Length: 129
Image 1 (cartoon, helix red, strand yellow):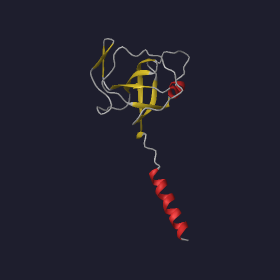
Image 2 (spheres, one colour):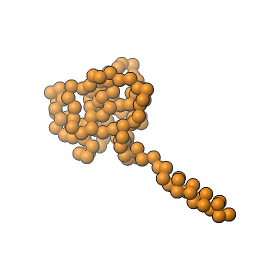
Image 3 (cartoon, helix red, strand yellow):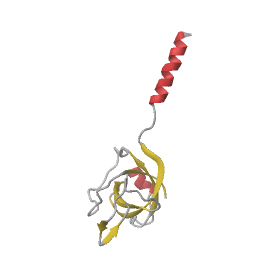
Image 4 (cartoon, one colour):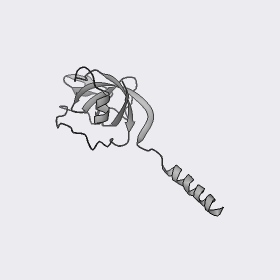
């Protein structure tokens, strides 16, 4: 009986310690892709204003943009974004912020990137189009 109770107690502690902690928030945000090259992207918050996650007065290609940040899409997320054209400029997607970048060991990436990028940078996961 003692072993059973000890086993149940140990199992309960193990369950409590096994929480998924890579999600920064359960909230999702809609963002518009301003520019994307080789999975690196500048995105703009569409329906949310947040100085915590994005910056204002970012000048890109002659335009001053508010609520923008830099991100790198994982290959899995980039596959979710497959469209008839390779240009994702203007595409609105739903993302969730993550604490760390998604592991992608079998993903090959080119080395090109956007010409300039915002100082604010976030890891995201694409959850919908």
